[in-house]
Length: 195
Image 1 (cartoon, rainbow, N blue to C red):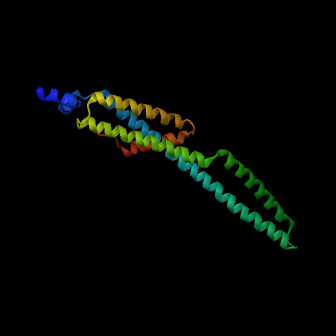
Image 2 (cartoon, rainbow, N blue to C red):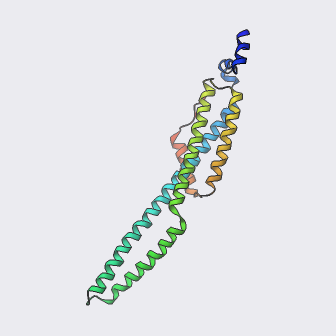
C-alpha cells in the first residue's frame, strides 16, 4: 500500500486499470465506441462514393467541353475556308456551341471540384475519428487505459464527430451513396476488436 501512496504523488495509479477484469470493463463505453466506428465508416464510404461520383461527372463534362470545342472550331474553320461547304454545317456547330455553353454554366454553378474536395475532407475526418476510437478500444481491452480516462477521450471523439457531421451538411449525398456505404460495411465485416 505504501508503494501506491508513493505513486499517487508522482502521478496517477494505473494498477487499477491493468488489474481490471474484462467483465468489469464498461461495456457501454465499448459499445459506444463500436457504434461510433460503425457510423464513421458509413460516413466515410458515403462521402468517398459521392466524391468519386462527382469527380466522374466533372471529368465527363470537361471532356465533352473540350471535344465539342474542337468540333465547333473544325466545323467553323471548314465552313469559312471551303466556299463550297454546305450551309447545314453551321447547324451542328450552333447546336454544339449552345450545348457547350449550357454545360459549362452547369459545371461552374455546381462547383463540382469544390464539392469533391469537401466530400473527401469529410470522409477523411470520419476515418480519423474511427481510427482514434479503435485505438481507445484496443487500450481498454489491453487494460492500458483506465475506463474513467476513456470517458473523457470518448467525449472528445463525439465532439469531433459532431464537427465532421456539421461539415458534411455542406455537401449532400444520395440514397445510392448510403446504400453503397451500407453494403461496404456488410461486405467488409471489419469491426473493432471484440471482447
